[in-house]
Amino acid sequence: MNKAIVFLAIAAMSVSCATGVMKSPDKSVNARLIEEDGKIFYEVSFRGYTVIEKSRLGFVIDGKTIGEGVTVKLSDVKKIDERYQTRGFHNVAVNKAVEYTYDIKGPGLDFQWQARLYDDGFAFRYLFNEDHPLHIDKELTTFTLPSKTPVWFFERDSNYKLKTYAGEWLRTVTDSLYCISSQGPVQGGLMTFELPDDRYMLLTEAALYDYSGMRLECMADGSMVTNFTEGDKGFDIKGDGKTPWRTMILADDLNELVNSDLPTNLNPAPDPGLFADMSYIKPGRSVWTIWSSYRRPEYLTIPYERHFIDIAQELGYEYTIIDDPWEDRWPDKWQTLKELCEYAAERNVRVIVWKRCNGINIPDNDYEAIDHYLDSVKMSGAAGVKVDYMDSEAKQLIEFEEAVMRKTAEHKLMIDFHGIQSATGEFRTYPNEITREGIRGLELNTMNQPIPSNHNVALIFTRCVLNNSDYTPIGFSNPGNTTWTHQLATAFAFTSPLTVVAEQADTLVNNPIIKKVHPLLKALPTQWDETVILPGSSIADRALMARRYGDDWYIVILNGREGKQVSVKTDFLKEGKWLLSEVNDDPADSADKNMIVSDKTISAGDEIAVTLKANGGYLAKLTKE
Image (tube, rainbow, N blue to C red; front, side, top):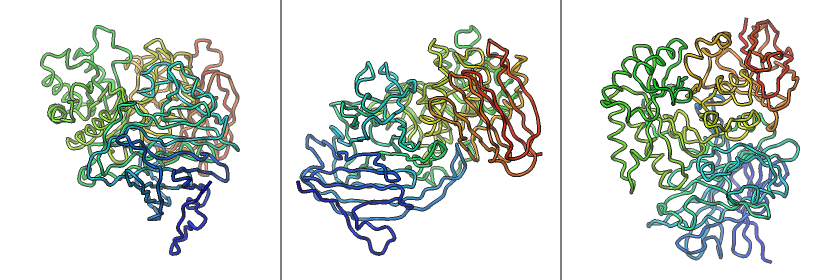
């Protein structure tokens, strides 16, 4: 067999391709582009361990197999080294990589294959340069991991969950993915793998624009082939288009996994013209009527919505969401909304309004209806729109979502997406996307599908790594099998610049147990300056985090099904004395509702002993004395 590793020595650079191996800046991640009998493959290693075995590249485009009978030439190598402001787990992102671009020439179509190697990951995409549209029948991109690699995936016992990433996170091995679901071998395009030596890989995509969302068809041999919502019908792209980045975060531990900037690094910087003014983009907390009150007769009545605004003011929360179906309930809807926004503004509260996507999604990409709708929203005084029920990763919906992000930015409005696929780092390019769903969140508790504690733990190391996770936390009145402290801690554990609190507003302010934690509820940050995953964390059992906002630190623990005693060492603190205000579950409370609040002074580096109840939690705020 004639096998050649494609390479080109770039003498002027410190990055050498003479061995045919692509390397990350510190050489911990290596990859190869392989030409074998005229076909192209790739493989990836991390710290000497092969994470992606030889896997196929290519397409079927306009009925022709592309990526066979090809010649390959390395045409460019460049370094990327930048920092930029971000939000979520920390406030500054580091984008440092080596980018390799290959020219692939062959019968049917020439294209480029571009790879970026980071010290914490690997990503690649395809670029086209044609003067006519291309019809993607199938993408042949394959991901082949070593046999029996443990993997976390979101279960999909219904088609809806596959389209909205709303499945429960479970663990299996790669060899079983093809047969584990009753719905067939296609799984969602987001998975976290456990590698040897307690390392991890998260597989996803980044910069999903003008293309169909990636799903994965799992094979009996453990490999996974790129799959699309459109199936055999395929979809069209521009002749000079490009695919999203096929992305692998590679981490030495869970802390590196959670803190990776890879998805946002692979997205373009925001358009300086479109986002010359970003003063309207304001992270914050929101009250929300629908979770607790949808079936109440007072739901969406004006006095009730005003009452929620009053409580938002009392809590110091910045937003309220007017949800489904406000447009049907109010005869003079825009005038009523305007008066409600004025009432809220007098109390330093802003309004976000809900909209079903098919009310503004016009076929054939005629988005004039979006402009008309957003004109009315803007004139009413609302701060943003919650667009819902896309329920698809098909290219048409992906185009619609980007149009909404762009047009809300033109109107200086924020966007909250629901009924949507997971995040792919879009908020770097469109920072007015303040949050998105694409997660199995607390709404399920109101649908007799209570969220188990272990799912919440796993979320930290799977979906939540991608940021903008609108789980809608804190459901004291319907907590499923979790304790009240667990529910409180979810608001501090899940990262969402717009944190929409599910619990009924009167319960938040009047319940005597909840009143004890008002200082924490009122101080709840929605973006963080620093996040540290602490020892003792595991995807299966518990998440222990230290998160800094300004000068204050928070310790957040979500525990799974088994009770546990843990010791939290505070070596993340600067020297000196710190006031520790902590919330624990009451071990004597069989109803799991009582929260014990206590204060004490500790020194930096001290260990805090915590007894965790089964399905429980822990939350503490540390303030420098």
